[in-house]
View 1 (cartoon, rainbow, N blue to C red):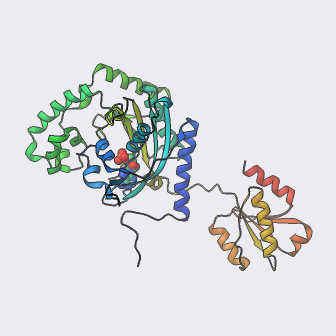
View 2 (view 1 turned 45 degrees about the vertical axis):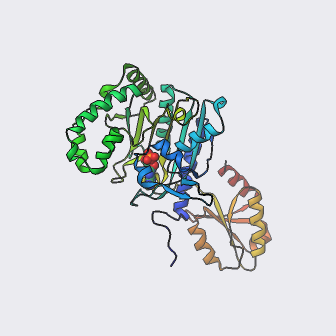
Length: 413
Ligand code: AMP
C-alpha cells in the first residue's frame, strides 16, 4: 500500500478546518496590527541556514532536509522562517521599506523523531518586524502572540516566559564564566554538550539530556551578567507588558536554541503537551542581517507551531452558514438553479449535482454541518416559497424568498 512519509500528515475535514481557522485568526490579528502578508520559497540554498542557525545547532547538524538539485546546488527545505525573511530582505534590498512588519505562515521541515506535537513537516505562523530597535516593538510582538492565544481561547492553557540575553558584550563575559564552570564538570556532560562546550557553550543550557540538566541547575545565569543598557531595555519591555496587562514569568534560564538572538527572548509554553511544551517563541536578532552581508538592520520576530495550537484548540468553532438544498421528487434541476442563484448572492450551498435520495442528502448535510436545509418539492415550487429547516433545532418554516435573503444577508454580515 502507498504510505505517507513518516512525520507528515494529511489534513481533511475537521482537521483542515481547524488548521484554516488558526491561520485565519493569525492573519486577522496580523491585520489588526497592520502587518503585511509575505511568502518566500520553501527551499533556499543550504548555506543560508547553516550561516543563520550556526554549524553547531541541532537543526543544521541533524535535522535539515538538504538535497543536491540537478545543477548540483545544495538546497534545503526551510526549517524556519527567520532565515528566509532576512535573505529576502537583503536580496530584495528592502532598506527603504523599514520599519517592515511581516506576517507569513506555511510549512517547515525538520528531520526529527516524530511524536505528538513533533512532525517532520509542520507549519508555523510567523511575525517579524525588521528595521527597528525599540522595546515597544518587542512588547508589541509579544502582545500579538498573547492576542492570538486569547482569540483561540487558550489563555488558561498557555503561559509566557521571558528573558533577556543582553548584548554581545554581556554574552562574551557570561560565556567565559559559563565555560569555566562547565570545564569542572566536563567529564559528566553528554557527548553532544562536550562538543558544544568548544563551539557554543551557551547552547548547553538548552540541552534536553538529563545528565546535562543536573549540571546546568547550578550554572551561572546570563541574566546576572547583563549590562545596564540591556537591563534598562528589558525593563522597558516588561513595563510595557504590564501596561497592557500581559502576564509573564521571567525565566532566567530561557536561552532559546539559536545563535542569532540578543536581548529579549520569549516562549509561550503549555504543560498539556508533554515534552513538546513550547507552543511558540521568538526574540530579537539585531545582528543577523548584518552578519549575512546586509546593512546592519535590527529586527525581532516570533513563530508559533500550528500543529501544537491545533492540539490545544482541538475543535474549530462552528460558525458556518451553509444551506443544503434537498430536492424532493423530480426537482434536481430546479434545486441546481436555486443553488446557483443563492451562490450568486454569496450564500454557501451544499448540493450534490447527481441524483440521490433525500435521506442520503440529509445525512451528508449533517456531515458537512449545514446550518439550514431547504426542501424543494412541487408544493414549494408552485407557491414560490422556501421551506427552511434549522438543522440545529429541527424547526421548519415556510418563508418567501425575500424573507430568506433578508435572514441570510444579516447572518453573513
Ligand atoms: P522553533 O523555531 O524551534 O523555536 O519553533 C517554534 C515553534 O514551532 C515551536 O514552539 C513549536 O510550536 C513549533 N515546532 C517546532 N518544531 C516543530 C516540529 N518538529 N513539529 C511541530 N511543531 C514544531
